[in-house]
Length: 145
Image 1 (tube, rainbow, N blue to C red):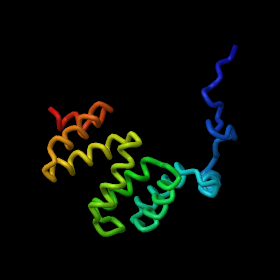
Image 2 (image 1 turned 90 degrees about the vertical axis):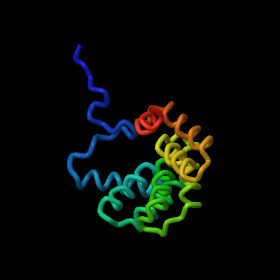
Image 3 (image 1 turned 135 degrees about the vertical axis):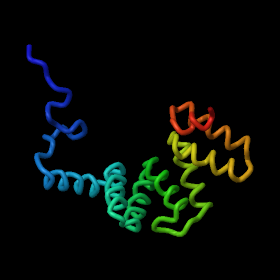
Image 4 (image 1 turned 135 degrees about the horizontal axis):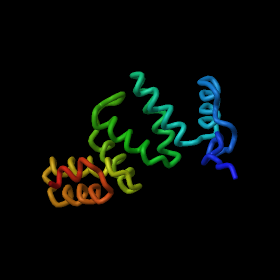
């Protein structure tokens, strides 16, 4: 009997054939964004961010975060931390990192830990970093050593 590939050249989500070219791929992504797919919206935000369009990236990440995407919360926290596309805002940075950390995002948890350590809240900072390390976050593990 002939072996079958894992997805037989089809999308694992919609089971339609994978796009054959970039034009088809862009069309599929637009369709997913129009359907309010938070993953597709976040990924579109990443593409905008990589091109230097931080304002559009933030708009897309905000939409994805409102739809429950944890990584979008992390990226918003990072934007407010670095002041990319927005003014630096420690309160918003912490807010978004906390939501992402509660959702299981190890980098957000690590960043909260670093923020707490730098703010003098050593016990809480160490707890955040220990939790992040327990999820395999390399920088957290290195920090503990």
